[in-house]
Image (cartoon, rainbow, N blue to C red; front, top):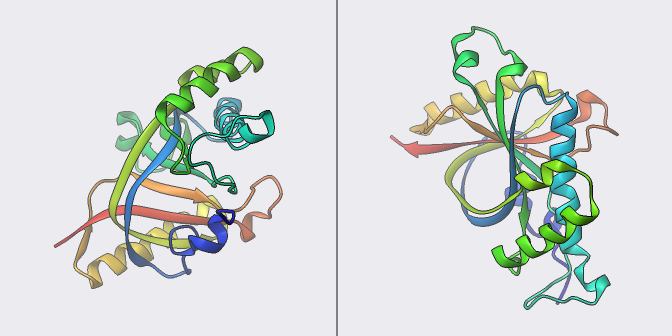
Length: 208
């Protein structure tokens, strides 16, 4: 079987055009971790490292002579994050990043099961010293009907793209279901200039 490469075979989900569009996202498997506070702080970085260490441990199983049933070779999926504000943050008329709440996640291929995830996670905890591995979970998540677009530029410029998405909703008789939104990080922020960053922005909607 050919390698599963999300950049080639799943463009509709991960590489949308830079104009809003409607999409239905089915149920997918994820490894997830929750956190709060400024994403520029060390805890956020450690949360990301915890997720990626597990994601790569699962991908590299065949190198250790372990081939799970249904295994296919694949490219590790991009980091995703669902963002919200705590009660205090919602009261402010500006964005204070210290009040952010987030759930980070990395999608897993179909062969990955809950049992397999926790077996590998337990092994990883014994090797790695990252205490945040204890917070990693396996989840199945269905987003359903959404509006999404590719935002190109700094994360701080996202409001202008959200405005376009809101306008698209009005024109197409859609409304946001909740204030949370998802970001999918196509670019590596450590290696990419802020004005060149590519981030999929997505929020759940319903038809009016």
